[in-house]
Length: 448
Image (tube, rainbow, N blue to C red):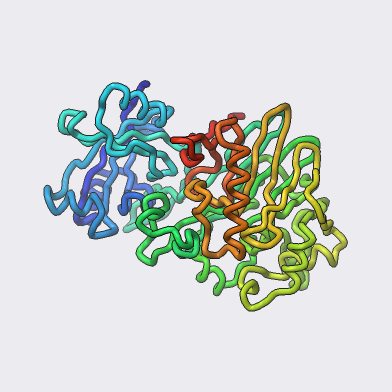
């Protein structure tokens, strides 16, 4: 293991006063603030490595967002000042294992989501000669930079980056895309699981909402397939507020980054037709009418899901928008399947039910390598335990049984599991821990 200095964390009581010194007096550039829900802080990064060191060291001003956060308790006990140093490592899981084998006392034995999309874990000061040390595995992405004018001076800020993540499964390339974030009630997302258990995995905000990414999946093989298409660009204000939509760059930018034009997509495959999965199937054309977004693609959905989506009731109406899928049928571009089957070489659908009655998972296989996109029966890495089921699932016992079957097929055999809503981890390999398939080993992304 080789560690390099990433940043120094400084706890501050008055962030504006601190910025007046570091930004205005010292002339340091300040990146856009980012809330780190797992630590209940707001982080303000200031690069100090010079113009030729984009990945060089930084200062991190830490502003508490909750009275019971570690930073709030630190400030109450010790006042403002240096809180920790952060060392960057290539593989945080391996680093923690190595430290644990050497008897080092760890605050966090497993990585947690941190700022800038990183995975982080803390080493106890008793093992670091009185210093709180944070380990960080950086996300494999570059931030988007914007410039603005403030009090007559030019500053550079960062908006939170989202980038595609590529994986290889045999001869197939899988690209986890993005279409922004949702903020949904934690109780709705975790159902009967006590908040005391789920809050450490997906920490809620002050309105009890958890942050969820929207991650469609691109599969490139003999054909180019898009699995789900996110929320789309025509969400009304009421829905945006209801879902807590946070959207900088969307699916159009993700596809461009992946190197795929809309007309190059051959197949659009739906796991189900909820608005955060089918919203990007259509766009508003001339005259305000909706039309298929991908001009050459055939759209594939489960017949049972189509029937449910076109015969809504008081319970399901909130989750569907007919403008997302009715124009597909009107344009003659919709193909309905009744059974589990292969949609293109290497890609097969399998009904799971649970989330909706005809929800389906997507299994991908090439050259004896395998991946699965379980969609909303396992939307995040926190939902790996079979009994961790969303309160929004229409048939929760069916979700649990489908998850048990899926976990039995993927645990400890290298199958890549791609999550559709995890805010930090697009994919993982599930391993057995004490005989139970709960622990996650971060998947390795393919470069190039």
